[in-house]
Length: 165
Image (cartoon, rainbow, N blue to C red; front, side, top):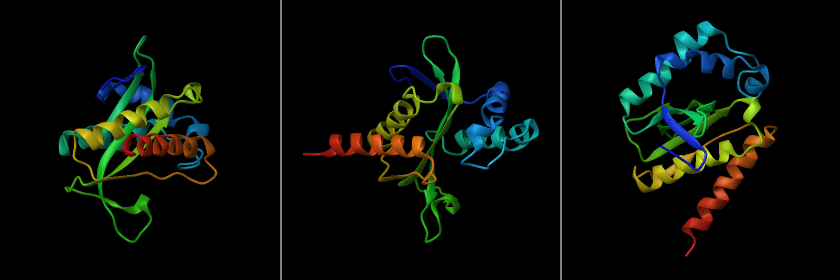
């Protein structure tokens, strides 16, 4: 997938260093786990999960995001089917039904504030509703994560404007 400034591509085993740099930044992880992830966690948990997601649901998964001009890794975007229930969204399980999907993203600190998160999320939302027959997209963030909340608000506004009669 391409946006105006990004290339979103499937993850490869060689992306381990990109993910170590991303998840190894305590500021990036502040609202997620509260601490940096280790290389071992990336190699044995995160990257295998990202690689397996595309194998399970070919049109869904996690994509590495790189700048289109020079190929600099800026983070990742994810879109995967979930089963809604009465628990918090973060506890919903993966699903084989693709009607409801969860969207997620993580951006390197050096790329914060440049609109990459909004641009990437908008691309996945467009894809979900136009190419994948998704009925509903969900996403969560902590209330104190102002930057992520702004991204979600911008995307929600854009979707509503697009759907307005």
